[in-house]
Length: 401
Image 1 (cartoon, one colour):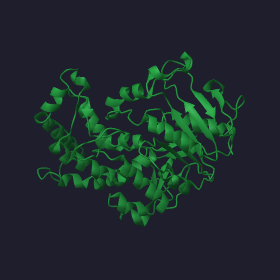
Image 2: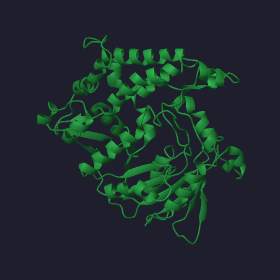
Image 3: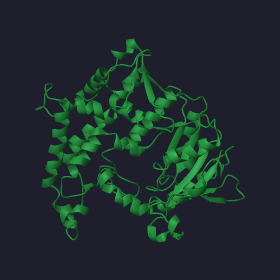
Image 4: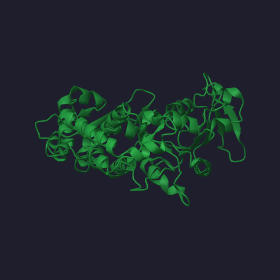
């Protein structure tokens, strides 16, 4: 159980007066995953949950050996380490159930919210549960969420919204803290902490998802095609990912709205799937923050490195190269299918931001000390190009309304 508690070590829970011990986290975990025991009759309530989960994942993936012949043949002309295998019906049967149990659990939701805080002043999330409500917790988020509130340790009354538009693998998550530092340096009242609503965090903080990747990395293929489907990649059998990050995103958004929680938000958004009305993709975040002067960013890299025509020190790694390099680590196939759509929609929506509009060419660490470029589009009539070399409080101040 110690490794479980370590996995959830960022969760801070109080009963309004005192911090509650790790014992409560352990109890919530046990309740959250009690449904695992019911999946296969041969496991019983005396088995350690961690062992049950590990055995279910191992059993599911081992059975792939009987159904991957076709996939392996299609990859036979190249190194097997480049092969992606489809998780078949038997594999899905248990892995999908495990993932669904986790993403609908209270312990998981507390974990992802805790790890979604972007702070430049070491703030953290504190969950508050009234003493009389502790016994009411069932481990199921949809039931428990009405008993759980949260606050940021260094609370701020001024709530802002930053929309980080841009193609997949352009660096929207990676750049987030740097952007907050830059904006905070120009305005002392600007918030130092933002809650990010980001599917990448939800995969990273999923115990089941990470255990699957760890097990897959021991095998002769790179990953499961349908573990998480990126834009432009389709599962022709169910058209669903085994891990559906949108469910988590919707649950967190609903929680913030239902509890009228006012908190600054940073939202990375590819806009690869909207055709007619992209505004509805982020209107709810404007409502949550109440920020009528929200800030829009377009964080981008060229589709491929060879397309980047900037001088050497400004060249980007390329979205395709960035995405491909992280496939095995993140457990998802990368697709640049929606790059053009994301760029067009991102630029259009960024230009609607009333509080500041910044187009950021992220070099993506292509070479040591590479320089990113920021263009200030706040004044629609001009584009002021500056580089990350000059971004500091004395030399340059971003225009923030």
